[in-house]
Amino acid sequence: MSKQVAIVMGSDSDWPVMQEAATALDSVGIEYEVNVVSAHRTPEEMLAFAKGAKENGFKVVIACGHYFYIIESWFIARYFLSS
Image (tube, rainbow, N blue to C red; front, side, top):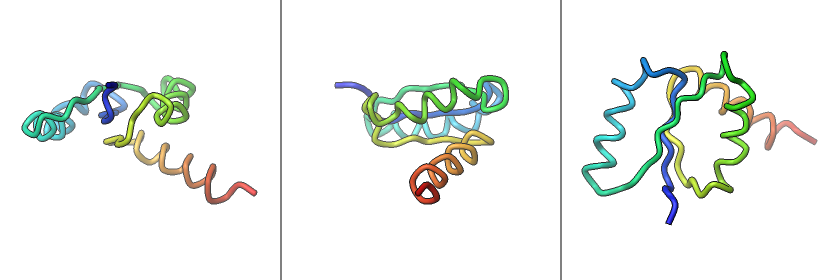
């Protein structure tokens, strides 16, 4: 079974914050995948992750920093504003 939780951050420097989520998941035996994808430096890679998250088996995405806001904006535009 593939990992159903993704922890996503824009930079390695976000890890001290996101490690708290990883620790919580570890404590209850939930496997996860950690991704560092910069919305500023690699926007196409970031959008590819977002577009493929469901197909890749993720049910939950825990994101922080600018990544969170960009993904949120993309989903709103894609699913609520498109005609």
